[in-house]
Length: 150
Ligand code: DQA
Image (cartoon, rainbow, N blue to C red; front, side, top):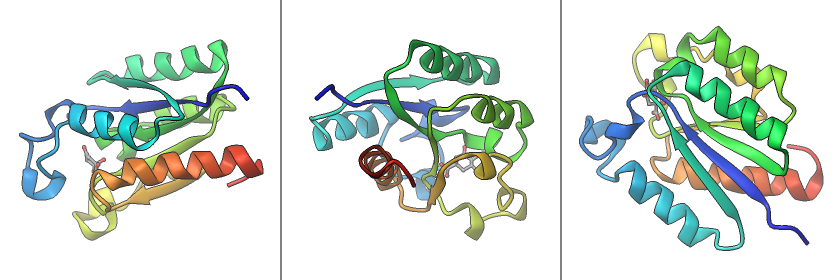
């Protein structure tokens, strides 16, 4: 059986985890979160990518789609979640499944965070479990890979 590959994609400001509003996002850095994913899922092959730039995220999605072999993407789009139609269109344009994740519970925060423009084109949404949201996102992709549906 071939090794399942997962892209963990993080958008703007997530490079600042650990220092950024720790009361909201916790004290773990993005490197800590990524390391813990590798430790928790040793059977998977991970690729990690973070950018402050919307275009770089789109290009990454197209790159892995064209390369093939990825079972899915765990995406924390940061603030782009709430307004990026370009990101939504990119997710729609690929067939690789994308799970939307958030550290915080976006529905328990400011009203402008209650709306996600990407949820409808993602296979599902996980929000509010801190770093564990990423782990749950990976588990969701494992389920899709084994059953063929979300
Ligand atoms: C976030 C929630 C977003 O509203 C915010 O802009 C972020 C992080 C989260 O992980 O909780 O940057 O996606």
